[in-house]
Length: 117
Image (cartoon, rainbow, N blue to C red; front, top):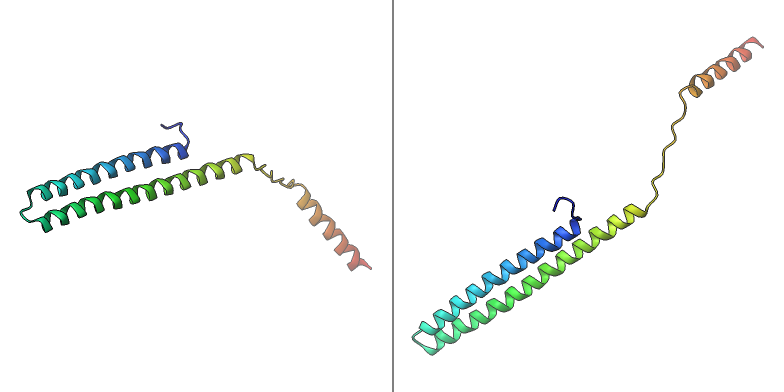
């Protein structure tokens, strides 16, 4: 995984989180359905069934948002890396050190010439 691009890693992590989230949601749904079967009154059983259904709906919505966010981040990262790879690098040209003393010497000569007049 060390050589993998980060966008692939982001997508893999999102898939792992998605499956973990859905597994937990199904466990909780099953728990509520189990409580509904053990309930003594119809109202209580209906309430637990409704909670089971709502739990799975909310978890599904959260998992979709998680997956969408991860896809957006991975796409953005991949796009920025493509742009960075295709952008030419400007090479900074350094001035030679010899030019600076030559300019100072020329200025000094001009100053002496003006004083001499």
